[in-house]
Image 1 (cartoon, protein in one colour):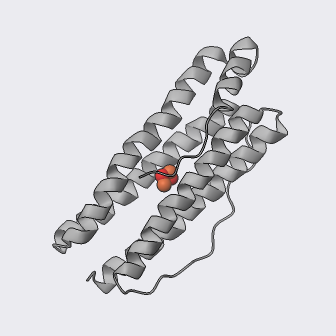
Image 2 (spheres, protein in one colour):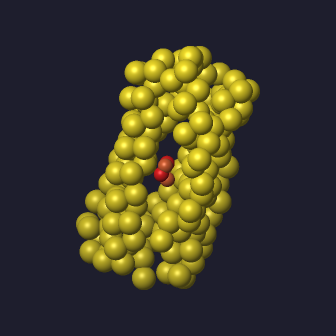
Length: 167
Ligand code: OFO
């Protein structure tokens, strides 16, 4: 059984995961509006992953016989100047999510809450991938720039990303 304090923090994390999806949908819109269908696809798939992350917390709170709470979301940024700016922000955003997950783990350790620690190990591993995936594309963008053949190839590559629900 998790504590009320932990349940409250896990509910807050549902909001943050849904906000991540909201932000990535805004980035997908920017890419679609810029005729970059592959980049748009990348963020649409990312939004699906964020919903999965949120629902994993949702289901865990239910399993622990606590009340799930769904909070409102902030307006995500929508006035991007370049793809590089988009991926800089996405990378920084993932770093801030990692920080939040680490703080949840600190609380779980402090409370000797072994079940939540076990759940959070999944998110800790997932965040390594999340940060790496944003940084990887950011680095490529820094090489190819915001237009030309390189960008065309990168867009084609990202069009291949498909949603596979994590195990
Ligand atoms: Fe849920 O990992 Fe991205 O934000």
